[in-house]
Image (tube, rainbow, N blue to C red; front, side, top):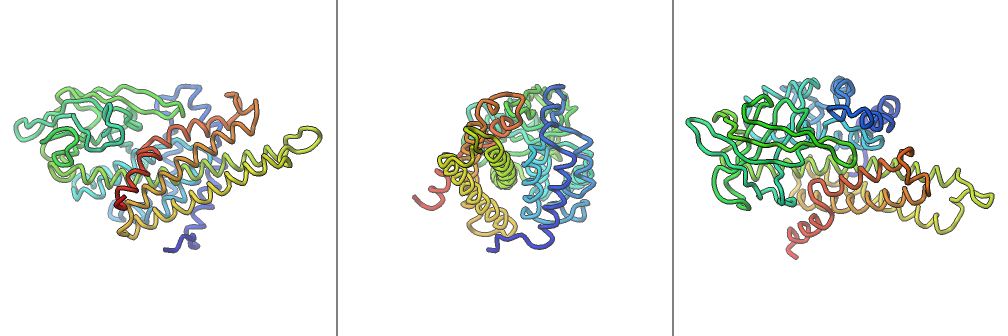
Length: 380
């Protein structure tokens, strides 16, 4: 497996880095937070990203996309992660967009994907429930037969960009009990559906989520995404795909936090010398560099495995997430500590990187969960 970027990927990475540097400084995250923006991201920036072709990278040409892979999408997400750009790649492209791709339901794909590619639609995946703790099969939301369709009842939590979405994809149980792998079905639910209640919330990293309550929301048979009762397997593939994308973003934020810390060590003086000349801080900075580079290798390996549909893809996904979760927290904590007192203040941007690391490391499964999954897949 070749882990080096090819010429086209290097050009894409440079274009994305240049755009993010010029148009999406970390101060934008602060501005969106302080003015309590209802979306938590910029729709104008999202539209521009779509015009640059980034939103359409993984989608087929028939839907307006570039028909490229995760290897290309990852370099864009890494660049966005450097300045913590909050636009809805995870929710709209990596989760629901991927679900639309894999479902085999061309009607829904034609309905939504061209709008996504153009930057005109925001979509969200409502799959987590209270106390589910990363178990995708822990679904209690009910989908009861009603005429030719279904009535959905239940509550979803931690729905990324749920309050900004034009439509939700909701997991509900058409048969079996919570915890069963079979019997889960995915439904496309328009935002304006009667009985759908969306409560806006936000996380410590200032990104927006929602609690979604379904009070007898009626959907038709044509609103099923994929096959009835087979949504669990589709959901697992979708979340694995999004996990690799998140790891690429985490890699970018780790790199930027480390770069900012190294710059501080070079310029902050004590006792008449830069603090970066102190041996103890050199050792700590070296450890961070090693952890970030190890993370890079796992992210690139997982991205290429997805594109090649390699037999060990799932193992590599968990390897990447476990490594990135541990490394992101280490880099975040060390960055704040090595900045000293100023690093503890809200006025300094370095704290945003620790907050993002705190959230990202538990999204789609924390390090312990993915290490256990990796061990299980390897027969330990």
